[in-house]
Length: 192
Ligand code: AMP
Image (tube, rainbow, N blue to C red; front, side, top):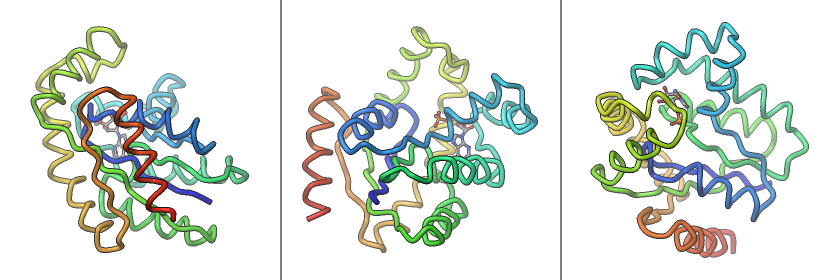
């Protein structure tokens, strides 16, 4: 199995590069943001609870996202591996992911960290807010809160994965196809 975490701030291009990775390596795509938005659309109890956090740009409680991910891992048990997109976002989630994968006899192979400056992130998200249908991309205060939450709760995970020798830094600015190329080369050299 090949398990890759695509990591980065909101607006760093995780979704775009996940599409590339899924295509290229034929992996399952596990995006907690997409799962939560689907749960909201279906008005499930988890979705209703999550919405209040998402509207404010805050993290949904760990138990909620861990349950969503566990269910999907079980559903897609035949997959050749996974792209984890937007998960883990806290140390508790990272530890739980290691445990869940260990129970399935497989590790996280690598983490791709898309590095993008904050002013570029804000501009990209505001632009996505104009053309897309995500309400959390329309309000600059919510965008800045999401970036602040990322820096406080999620960025420290880099150290966790660096200690395991799994961290790969990718410059996340420029043409998406160029970034994909860099990712392809990084994955190839890491898996040698
Ligand atoms: P995303 O689509 O990854 O940008 O996520 C949108 C929102 O969903 C985030 O701002 C959080 O409120 C919530 N969310 C997504 N993934 C997670 C996660 N792993 N842990 C906690 N909250 C999450």
